[in-house]
Structures are given as structure tokens and as C-alpha cells.
Figure (cartoon, one colour):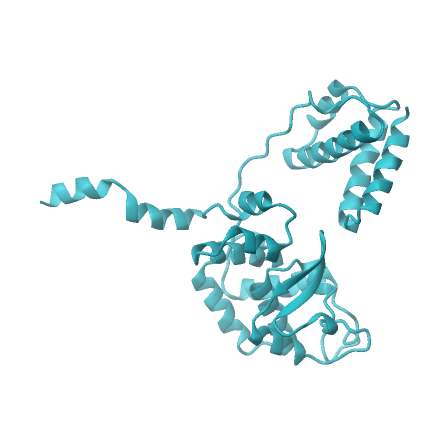
Length: 284
């Protein structure tokens, strides 16, 4: 069996399962590299491992996951042997993903007080709903309901709750014939053009930087993580957050968002550290 045959069958299956365009594009790119490594299928594990070793850890892990998805599909569909079982998964260095503190969120709210209505609606929507930038770009007025919005995400359509304050903000924006909520500047030639994901990203980055934030990755994804951190600190449950985020598994929610940030751990440490016993004895 040729590797190209397996790839075509796999990609067709992915499209039938309704995977996002971004995921399909990523799979296609990774599998194009696989087709250059081996003509026959399944490829030799040592060839795969040698190729992954030439990539940076993040790119190597992305390729690993794509190759594994193809491997599992082919094992079910064509009864081929699993070639990825003996391939070592690349190790990704742990990172503390940045989020905004309550103080920084307050500063952001202060900056939005006199912001244009569109910009205020964009930032408040991300803060309140934790949706992805692509989901916000595709939001239509008809998707805004009484207490929810309907978004199309990686796992299909889902309902995401919003506050009355944000709902009123969104509905107060000008109506456009295309039905989308967010458009270009009001007095420019782009006023009737729907804002794309990149445009939303730039607006979010601009206002986060205006608060004096000097860290990395000021983006809608950062506000999404901040939502999760605030949710857990206030006692929110994993299952509800999973539904809001649109994760297919609660494990994904736990892995990516349940971990406390360093400042949260510091606060807990101050409360529970046993040094207090020594400190009290010393003072006494």
C-alpha cells in the first residue's frame, strides 16, 4: 500500500467528521512531509523518529500527533500495524501560560470606559464568554439570544452563556447586510467589511498593551485562559467550563486550565506553609 493512498483516505475521513479548516490544513502540511519520508505504508518507525529529531519540540510534537492520528485510522480501516507505537513522543518544555490578574482586568475595564463601542464589545465578549477569535469573527446577530450566543467551534455548534451587559453591547452595534456582528472602523472604507480573526487579535492586543502589560502573548487566547483561571478561583466546576470552552473531553480542560498560576500558588503557600509553626515558636 502506498503512503499517499493512506493519506487521501485519512483526509477524506477527517473532512467527513467535520474537522475545522485549520486542523485539516495542519494535517495536510504534516502529512506532506510524511509522504517524502516513505513511499510505502506503513513507514518505518526509525525513519519517523529520525525526522522528528530534526524539528523543534513544538513542531515535532505537532507532527507526532498527526502521524499518530493517521496510524490509528489506518489500523482500523486497513488493519495495518501501528508504526507509531515504538516512536518516542517529543518532550515539550513546560511553560507558564500568561493570564491577566484581577488588577490587570480592572485596568483593562478602565481603558474600555471611553473606547469605541465596537472595541468595547469585542473585548467584553472575549472576557465574558472565553470564545476563540475565529468564533467571534463568525458571530452573527441572529446568533445572539436572550442569555446565550451560538458559536461554531472545533466541535461544531455550541451554546455559550453571556451576561446581559455584553448582550446589550453587541446588539447596540450597527447592523450590516451580511449579518456579522463585528466590522471595520466606522468612518473608513473598511466600515462594511467583516473583521477577520487577525483584526480581532490586533484590537485585543492593543487594549491589553494600553494597561501597561509587558508580558508575552496579549491575545484573545490570553483572555480565554484568564477566564478559566478566574473561573476556578471562584469555585467553578470543570464540567461547566468544558461546555463553555467547547472541549470534547474534560481532560483537556483539566490539563490546560486547571493548573494554578505561580501567584495563585504563592497565595496558597502563604496560608498553609509549615514555616508558620517555626515562626510562632521563634516569636514566642
